[in-house]
Image (tube, rainbow over all chains, first blue to last red; front, side):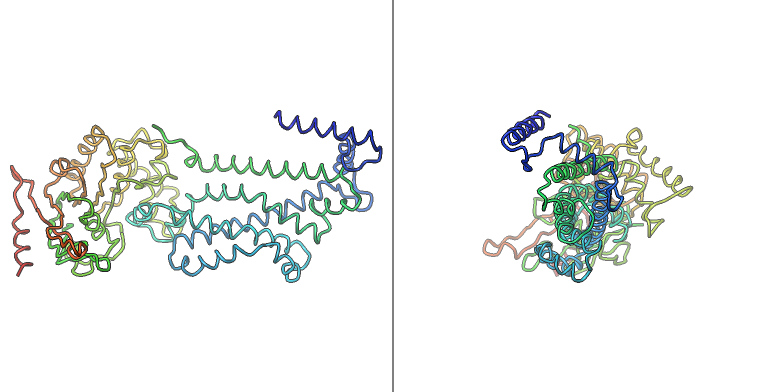
Length: 255
Length: 257
């Protein structure tokens, strides 16, 4: 906790210094001003639209994020298991995925806007395109690294390839998926905010880039803190889900 | 019935000859142990029976019939490691075999059929002495207990042949003795054929009714890959002392002609 308090103290002192020198300083607004602005954004309806701006932005962004990460996770699981488990799929798609994962997602953002329009779809697609290849590669490597013995054992227990996939492989890579998703929260937010900054009318990233024109640090800083907090909560939630759903993966070996 | 026959079997990887001219008839209900130095093809021999590998020449027959070239439920296996599924409890591990057989699509049992399968599984688990540990995950079990579980799991399918690939190699001597005391009665009661690869000669003699040694009798220093391993000893252990198996000598003589 101490480092956080230190940062806060440094900020308060810096802010006070600048205010003393220039009462109109916008760069480091005092905490009281940020609290005031946050309150206005969170509990007072917007004069023009009647929305509660912070919550409308949060809901829009989280929906995009959840859709993007959800679809990416699903695709990653299906392709990862297929590529890792089936030599045919591995030979067919392994290289393709390896090359596709090298495409910088931001470079195809204009294409997404052109093809999918400026609505929700293009933003969700950007997250999917940014996150899926990494998930597919990591999960397929994880599947391929599973001990051969386990697959053979399953076969001697009478399992078909499909049964091996759903009862042996899939459950065993779920903890890995959780780990990957934890690592991909950051990139997912990056893609989300980029897409929102360029073309959107609601969303956390949109708001930050909108008020940038007025140098409204009193909005930007609380928003950044809020986004960080959200990402951190997701991270904790994923850890919690992993421990609850896959206790065997977190159990310490005895001896 | 679960007799195994190897008819003039050769296994080669490219130029490398691993096994050459293996001829052996293994009667139903035999407990066969295979010994030999590392790299003499013991595991290859086992993989041939498992169906994980095909002979380059010759045939491997189960009860006189060729079997599909992939592992199946009539041949169970216990490996030295990684034989149990870490994401399932002890009960879940044994139950899985029943679930595979009865539910091709979901591989999950529900209701009465599940209760019935659980009963059968519990009986097996009790048989290998893991009764009190039913709900534990394998990571919470010791090495010996994990191997017990692997055996129970394999027995659930009532395999005709049980293959043991250095099953007790990673265990301490005390635990190993306990495992010996477990496997022998199981083999006797269930009347299956067991083929066990081991590095422990004492274990090989104590458990088995027949023992074969694989080795490379010929070696060309210029081309070490040219000659593969053969059966160099074939002993019947059911008599008072170890006696060479007659059929082995005959098969060798035939092969030499």
